[in-house]
Each structure stands twice: as C-alpha cells, then as structure tokens.
Length: 235
Image (cartoon, rainbow, N blue to C red; front, side, top):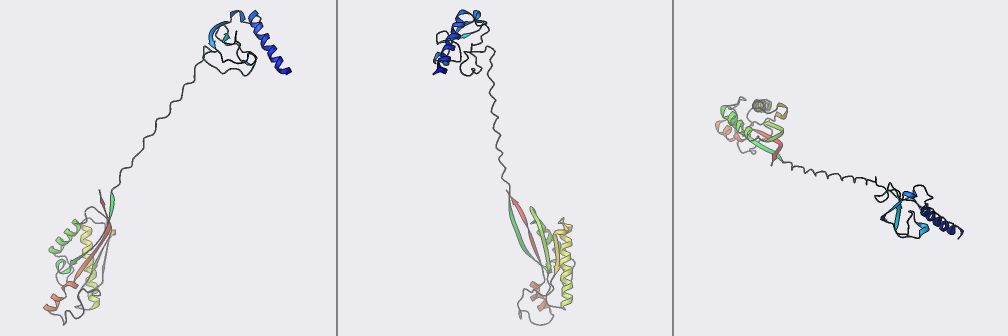
C-alpha cells in the first residue's frame, strides 16, 4: 500500500512540474494530438495532459513519466523513426524435372550360321556367300550396346576327333576375325570350337561311312553358332 501511494504521489508531482515548466524543455513542450492508450495515470509510461494527449518536446520526442518500461521506437514519438524494411522472401527455387531416360532393352540372340554357306567343305576360309551372311548379321547389331559375342564352331563326325576339333577352332576364329574387321571390338568377341561333340543330327540318322549321301545328311552338324548379349536403347 505504501508503494502504491508513492507512485501516485510521484505521478502527480511530475504532472505538476510539467505544468509549471520546472522540467527542462517543458516551456517548449506541445501537444500534437497523439493518442495514448487509456490507463491509470500513475501507470502510464508517457506523460499526458488529461489522460488523452501525449506531451512532446519541441523536437517531437515524447515525455516519459518514469513509470513502466520505456516505449519502443515508433513514428508517434520519434520523427526520425524509420521502420525496418521487411526482408523480401527468397523466390522459390524452380523444381528441376529430370527428363525421362530412354529405356534399355536387354538383347540376347543366338544365331546359327550354316558352315557350308560360310566355308567350302573341309575348309576354314570364308566364301563370298559367307562374308555376305556375316554382313547381314552385323547389320542387325546396329543400335545394340554389345557386351559379348561368342562364336562357336561345330563339325560333323567325318574325320578324327582331333582333326574336327582343330577345324572347328579355325572356323570360329575366321568368323571372329571378320566381325572385328567390320568394326566390332576384339575384346567383345570370343571364339571357340567344340568339334563334333554337339551334333544336331540324331544317332543313326545318317548311317554309313564317308559318302556324298552321308555328307549331305550331316550338313546341319557343320555350323557356327553366334551368341550375342547386350542392350538396345529404346525411346
């Protein structure tokens, strides 16, 4: 109760001093019609004449009563007040939309080439018809990202196993050499011969020894299988 009376007395004293001009600068103080929040006189931070108008000095500064916290800077009590500029919100970053990548199609092909088309009988040198057949094969590989090509040479049963193994090796190698000459990377092409071990004809289908009839009957066994693996890009 004692503290409350002291504040009231101090508020009255300050108002009285302002009215008589005892406070420095009071003779120049003027009311400019700035509205102050209505509150008990002893609790107002700014000095008013009748509870409505805030007293200001000649340079526009508001008078502080000594009660409560000092008022925050404002346009009403500071002619030099400039509000802080609002920081402009950064423009949203554009959302990058990734272009749809082309789909990769897996390619695995097994092509069987007639050895009698590629080579003369019992030979490992490519015939013109054989080179033409391989050209058509290479054309089908356009647009394929090659992983591997395997050329496997086969022979019929005529002759010794050792001879047929060697012949199948040489024919497979001849196919590889031609493919590399057409621009296919050498490390992508593998060549091997398996001789007469994987015939297509069935046992007893071409009976008899070496003859024109038996040679013609065993023709499917004389072949080169080419296996291709890779991927083809599709839009």
